[in-house]
Amino acid sequence: MSDGEVDGLVSSHSLLMLQCEVPADVNLRLARAARRTGVPVLLDAGGEDRDMDRELLECCSFVIPNETELGRLARRMGGEEDREDGVEVDGGLVDAVLDDAGPHLDRETVV
Image 1: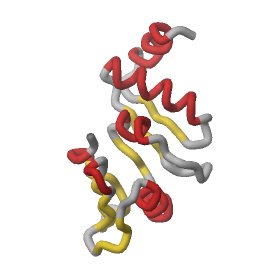
Image 2: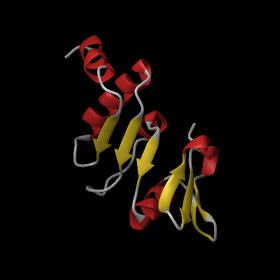
Image 3: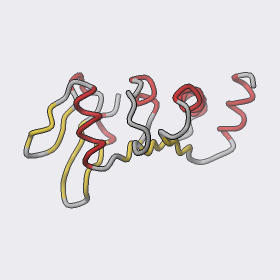
C-alpha cells in the first residue's frame, strides 16, 4: 500500500488503537499515518516484551501500560521508577503517573 492509501484508511477513523502483538514496523507506519491525518493514537503497551521505538511513542496520544510495563518502558527510555509520585522519562517525552487511577501517562507532557 502507498502512504496515501494508508492515510486514507487511517483518516476514516476517529481513533487508532495499536498493540505490541502487531509487528513494530506495521504499528509505526500506521502511527505515522495517524499523525499526518490528525487521528489520535492509543498504544496498548502490553504483550510482547520488546523495545519501544521513540518515534512510535511520539506519535501516540495515549499509552496504556500496566505497572510492570510502565517500569519497563521507563527503564528503556532512561527514566527513574522509584519516585513516589510516579515515573518520569528523561528528556520530557512522557511523565507517567502511578496514582489511584492506576499507571498512566500524562498526555500534556508527550512531545
